[in-house]
Length: 510
Image (cartoon, rainbow, N blue to C red; front, top):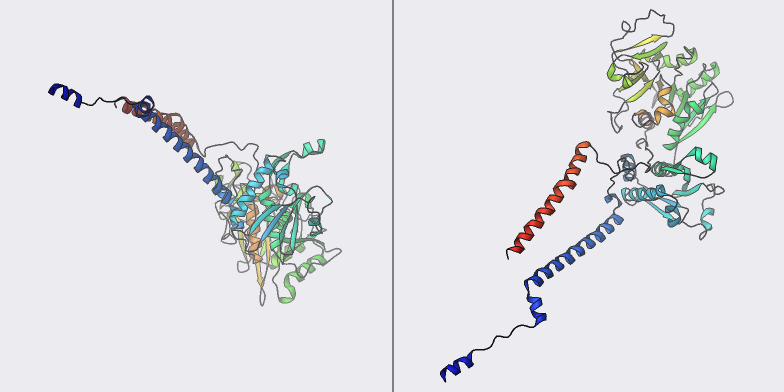
């Protein structure tokens, strides 16, 4: 009986149901954990992607530009100018956003750069898209813009001042293809230059006037065109004046005499001297660029020489040659050289480690050190080859042993202000080719000099165009490239493999 009771007191253990057993199994527990972890990981990645997308939309500068030529990054000059904007400027693009970005990848690139410019301006620069088919009144608000051409892309506005921008201001194209086919084939964007130049133009109320003297054999095509374009881009008002038919503007701050092929007449020289003296008030500047051309030889200019002498300077009667290898451009011809700065007009340069290049210069002699000083100069291993030198000329024996000025300035003080005569003894260094060469500082130095004399606080606006045709992804150096290869080919795969082995062994031993 006792045995029976003992048997009946033992409860029979029930087996769990199949669904419950499946949920409680080790396989299911580990599988569920894996699914949960995977779901959480995917959610985190999606959330991170959304957050990063919102941040990039709000702060375009966060976009990483991995192209080798930084095709989607603003230049430092653009960032600097935009950060210093004090007036509100707005660019109205006369197209819908969809139409604008569908033209080509260069237009998408331009919109990306516009976003970054707006961000860099701290709200001072904005832009929008205006569909003129839906808003025909828009064109009537800006009557001085040429709306008759399809080339007009937009209008930059600051208060009551505005400036039209053409599509060719903002983008580069294959001219040969256009001339043969009549269709634009876009090759790059100059949206940065166009926007900065237009903003500078509409925010400058009283433009400094520069009179360009003509009528003495000067020409704009292979002459002063590069300088005047540079001045216009930096919000100067440039006027051409012939003293044969007109007079110099009494309100002009500068006169540019660029590489004349002959001397000034007595009347023109007297008018120029009178303009510099400004009734004893002075405050004027003549920029004289000598026509140094070995093919022409010496150009006799006694009237111009008299003005230079009055300001303590004289041009040499020969061509400067450079023998120092460190001042020769790729150790080529001795008549093409790299110039050293002096202490004048260098404070606002973005870098004094970038040379100004010189081609075929006469060199300047400082006659009166109390009046004149060098601005740019050769090494102390340079000399002057006289125009009348014979075959027996000894270049080594005629090295001066001290730097030869290539650009110089003479200053005469009046009662309140000073007048300046700035001499560049080489015209080639101020032609478009050298001004537009990004490896040299010719353009920035020239504009820094002019801005400083004009008491303008703006830095020179020199911005390169951008293209994405060859905007390949690239590491900045061979070392970085090798490091990336090792990381992605060995380190990351090894880490993933090691993690897998550890997880497999832990689960196997449970």
